[in-house]
Image (cartoon, rainbow, N blue to C red):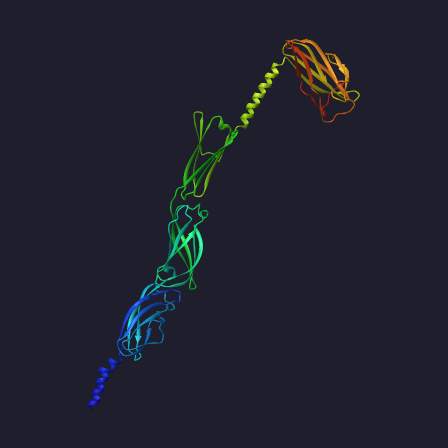
Length: 459
């Protein structure tokens, strides 16, 4: 009876203390992040010291999360082991943020203890941060970065970075809380028309079969750069070209003023036309007030053409010179022709030579030359020639003197049995005379006849 009582006491007080597990559990480190849509576990390292009897231990939870290690882990009495606990996302779990739940460590005898673990559940786009340094006008490179905000390892990332300043792709890995920088070569032509300010940095991230778009910010630092050049060339046709180019990233306001006088303005053209024209005395001011966007230029062309006034001046000088020369002559002669219709049907012309004396002249001899293939009709005008030379093909008149203002008209008819088609030209007549004891000459104009003209019949 006494033995039975001792056995009962042993089973009540001693046996449970032998079979119950006695563990000291201390967290060592964790990668507590799980990402929606990516089948990668959160990791927890815990140090477990077995203060009880040697045992086989199993890890599980009651919320449906898949855990590792699977099966059992054997820990001897007084032994310490570091166990990596993995917690996988479960289907339909869409909670965002920190989530705490219990898991259990069970011994082979059925006894167990509970522990708590906190996981962080996020979307993939929340795992990254992208950005860059400032961009300055004229720089040839810049630096951008991508930062892994979570304690989660990404082994293979395909990324494309795009902005108004660049567009490039990169493949890399990114450990937990790691930041990677990339140096980007810039081509100024790609953004020479971009205004200063803040611009979006877009990134397409592909990893673990998922793709997300992430945005950052790029600051394009303000810079005001306006370069001006001026060309001036040409004397008779003078050209001025004024160029202003905005090489900064702000809209540049500029004013250009050109001064002309009241004469030069008449022969000056502008491209483009000025915005305003102001007059002050004999000066004219042309103004261009423009706004030049970044990367663009304003070119003003001012062209003054002195050819026309030069031609006018030369024409006036020549006319005056000719007039003076003409008026200085004491004797001038001119020549006219007209068509006459002969009864025999021959081609015939009446030739008239006019001699005008501006002052008293003496010993005047007027000689008119005859074209070939024509004959002279024996009928002459009031002034009979001194001689007609068939051999020399000429007719000559002589006058002892001509008084100032006197005009003599000499006329004759030439004819030919060969018809003339088109334009018929007669030689010039020559006058030789004496004035104040000196010999002078005068020459007439050249007379022309067009064959289509018709005249009266000549008896």
